[in-house]
Image 1 (cartoon, rainbow, N blue to C red):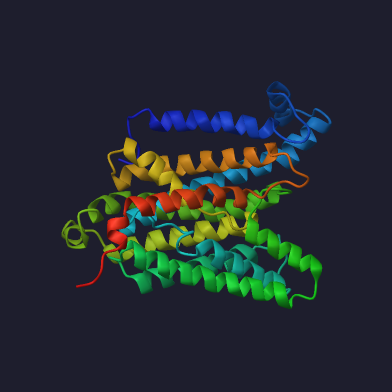
Image 2 (tube, rainbow, N blue to C red):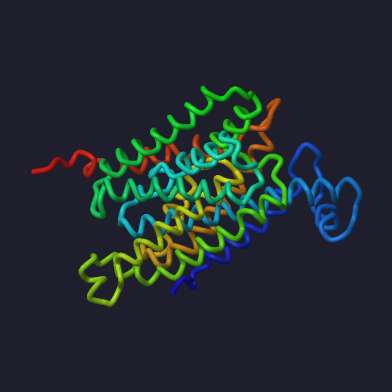
Length: 334
């Protein structure tokens, strides 16, 4: 079953409600919870403008992007049976950002065009496919990290080249946004732009739960149980790429949520990849929403980008996971 009878999911849902309320009231202009709720359902002057047009869109985007990041991370970790599998490790956010930057830099589309998520999705899909093809299905952590580093570095270099060659300072500002990741100045238009693709990614990954459970026993066992491994792999890779591309298209590059979220919930679920999917998605939503609330509380002249905060938290966690599996890192071929 996708869901579990443990209190984990109800607890995560309660946490999401609390964080959503906090997201609606935290900001330069503090608003009480009762006033924020009133502003959502009736016109309350300036409070309604702040809540509906500024804070509600970024709350919804944090929930959506955190959900699909955690879900995709859990799906990829189950698919590759590797605790370091994540779209960020695969260089997908950087590649998606490069795809988005490329079409904006070329002047083909604007930042609110439907072509933007398609370009970002193409970049993310290409990066994940490259890493999976280079590293292989039974890759060690070293091979996986090195392949992802190479792809992410290549995409980052392409983005840096676009910055270097850009004659327009406003274009450079937009490109930097895609590199850092933020929910600042997002609107309901961005929510509507990302939602269909995130829904599609969810519908691709969630039904693969039973296949992931069988795959945990090995590919041959999974095939003997009637699982189409190639189709399963295609669904999860496509879902992860579509979700990542949609997220990057509207919020820039925000990494490591998909790496951290599955690790947080896995000890409560018996390390079953099928049961990890939904809790990891909810945990990812909670993590990203908490990070977005935190950046609004950090005293600074300009708002700290949420992608910077998630990287500051995610990289040490990433190193900790590697340190726990250092025996595999030093494994040498016979």
